[in-house]
Length: 295
Image (cartoon, rainbow, N blue to C red; front, side, top):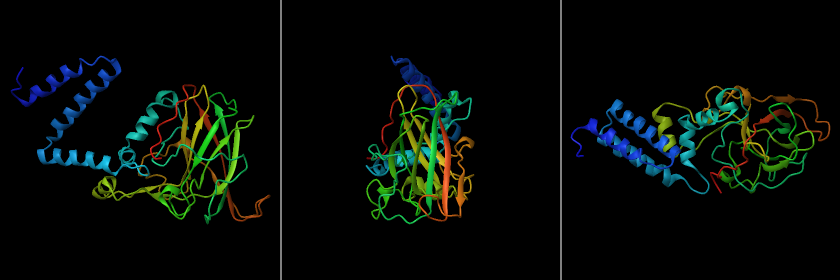
């Protein structure tokens, strides 16, 4: 029937959405229309603002490349990534979880490294960090032969794909847990860093007087058949931005204990150095890898 008033638009669109055959897609689309139209009505969105919003969506796509994902950055900066993560993990939001954000810098084919090895592949000045971690299930039973992909930013706050001075796959590596569910390696202590701000996300942050910083963290993606893929970040609680992460990713369960040691390391004779001991907890489920945000 012809639409006579703005109040007629939403019911007409909902009728179309409700014809969707797939029940989950129908549920999502009906809810999307209700909330999206409700937002337009509540804010009384102007035509100029709508055109501006459309241009922003287009720009998000243009700025997403093989080495940069502006859409992921925006989702994190709006808290959407954190909300989806916590709703879908920890017994569907009921308990603490090691799960955290994937972020925009995971790469699929990190090189394999034996336990005890180093993921430093080029001259990367920084304080040595020795990581020892355990992967277990919710009952505390170790998970052996899990594949653990780790990566982090350099001590100058850049991932290797952002920094031509770093070797390919610097500060990235793939490990396998032993019979006790453990893996361990050497690296350099990471620092907090600003997310890229040259695009749409940067415009938003400046308009809101927000800083662009993420606190220092270590990424891990853990794969084991019979368990949901665990995507985690372990954060340094001493970082000055630990309570104001621009991506809203810090949770109590993902705080690590980065311990400083001023005496020489027992095997490498370096000082000072840091240690990190952390336990990752996996939930049962289907082991499905996410799509890499960059190549």
